[in-house]
Length: 256
Image (cartoon, rainbow, N blue to C red; front, top):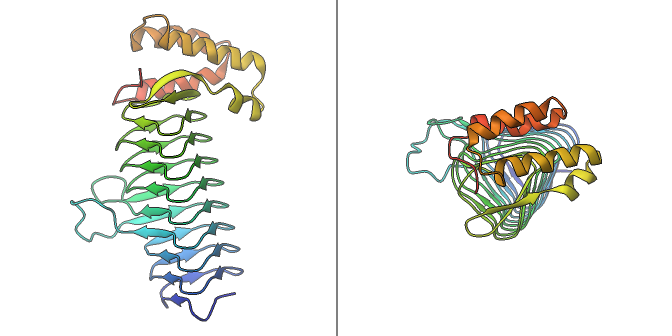
């Protein structure tokens, strides 16, 4: 299952069932879990840990040095979970010593062609990055978020769980959970109702989330005032807790 034309360093560790296509290069310090399939002409550089049942397509560059002028050769790493799909020409960089040291990608994510995940990004599970979506360094993305094609996230941005960024969105502020954004710069346009339905959120829960969106964006509250109202709403709908935790932790401020 390892093509004879692949170049695999003796310091790499490949579990049972790993397949590697021709002309792929796997460097030292790379650990790949069972059942992961790597296409031709992919390059994987360590230190990197890649879990089980991932699919890495041709010409992907995974675990390369961070594109950060502060980087001076320190040992940093990349951590990828299970069942991720990493499509053609995707680039994923390792972390930096000045921040998390590791770039991390969770489970069951789809990174379409030409996507870019910069140093120290932290991605959860079930995320979709459509073609050519790009993340600056230190971006954090919650579970089930979707970034449309050619969308871009400024460094240090936080993108909340279940949010939806339309094609070509330019994200320079934090996007709260459940919220849909679009534009340059990205602006909020409601909640991701369709995505929530697909994930079996009940209609009453979705209505509560819509109400929370109006509290944040339609009632002229400051963030502190909105938090006070949201804490009361959380008693009726625990899912509002995602809004509260996100607003309490936001440092860049949220999209408006």
